Amino acid sequence: MDSLQTFLDKVRAKNPNENEFLQAVEAVSSSLFPFIEQHPKYQRHKLLERMTEPERVVIFRVPWVNSKDEIEINRGYRVQMNSAIGPYKGGLRFRSSVTLSVLKFLAFEQTFKNSLTGLPMGGAKGGSDFDSKGRPDSEIMRFCQSFMTELCRYIGPDRDVPAGDIGVGGREIGYLFGQYKRLKGEFNGMLTGKGESFSGSLIRPEATGYGLVYFAEEMLKTRKEKLQGKTVTVSGSGNVAQYTVEKCLEYGAKVVTLSDSGGFVYDPKGIGKEKLQYIMNLKNGLRGSVREYAKKFDCDFVEGEHPWKIKCDIALPCATENELNAEDAKTLIANGCRCVAEGANMPSASEAIALFKESDILFGPGKAANAGGVAVSGLEMSQNSLRYSWSREEVDDRLKKIMKNIHEICVQYGKGENGYIDYKKGANIGGFVKVADAMIAQGIV
Ligand code: NDP
Image (cartoon, rainbow, N blue to C red; front, side, top):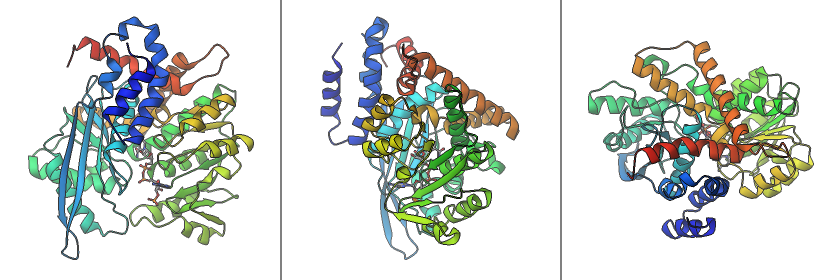
């Protein structure tokens, strides 16, 4: 077996300039190497070498005509990373910053995350460098139709089941679904995050944010604490952030920040139900700026910054990757923050995570803490196969159980002799074992 350094050098050489992908591989393999060295059955199968090589990557042209009758050309991707434990599953991201590296990092992380949910889902991710901001609905629909015209060759309910991610919400999923149905003449569960009226699952829009809060509450319990009465900073103001705030409010916490790509708002009085409704109206659809919130409710807007300077007990990054660096971690620690749980994928830099561990701060990595979204996507697949719908309460109950179970897996594999729970290590090993066992059982494929 290669050393960790040799393994990483080989991955770097094979994937030059794919910084986000390399960052994710390094973070995961540094937890996994000691575990693999202790378990000879995993050593000779070159599992990590195979897991870091996507089973398939599809890159395609997405031509469409905008409202000014001009031709626009975007690039579409689907990274099918690993299908050892189920059909490929993972969201679609539409944003100008989408690259192959970003999607490979997300698909790699997704493989472990999906395994942690206990549901039969492989790992994938896809998307395009298309940005819907400021575009009329008709353009978004034409783009989605062109994107699906190509993607439909590679997906299906038993093959690969995409969902939403940044820039892809209920509206986009509706347009993508409509086009697939038209092209294939089939009404099936090839996408999740669908509208309730066409076989979507209840609680899917809420699932990532709610699941994050359920997970954070489990983390706090290990220190005999709870969310009630705590001050929370949240970044982002999209799907994950909105439902994170909603559930925090239900648990009696006070949320004082939200952010977007322009900066953050600090509302020391707390973002209550009505203010949250204002954010939902502002962000969903026309995607306005949180600056408007600051004007409306007379509080501070800090341009171009993330909210980590604001004093809090709990920080929940819910915007995007690499939005919390080592300096931010130092400030959070100095200000008395006791728990960080990731709603976004890889928002914290490796150095920040190391500082949290050194300072004995609870740190929940995205692949565990934000797995609620894909978990309910998995439940949507089950309901579609059954041609049946579960009630809100039934889905929410299952989501809670799944998040609790993921927490237990993290404790099982991550609790050290000194009692500190290394959730990152626990999630990486816990996610790896099931996929690795399935890969060994299935031979060299
Ligand atoms: P949305 O598109 O609904 O919201 C994204 C939010 O992040 C927006 O507020 C956006 O600001 C902000 N944002 C995006 N890029 C940046 C940036 N570079 N700097 C600062 N803010 C930024 O996406 P989601 O809420 O669905 O996704 C958020 C995160 O959660 C992503 O990391 C995603 O991968 C992850 N995730 C999502 C899941 C889901 O179910 N949706 C499941 C698991 C993880 P603006 O409005 O200005 O664009």
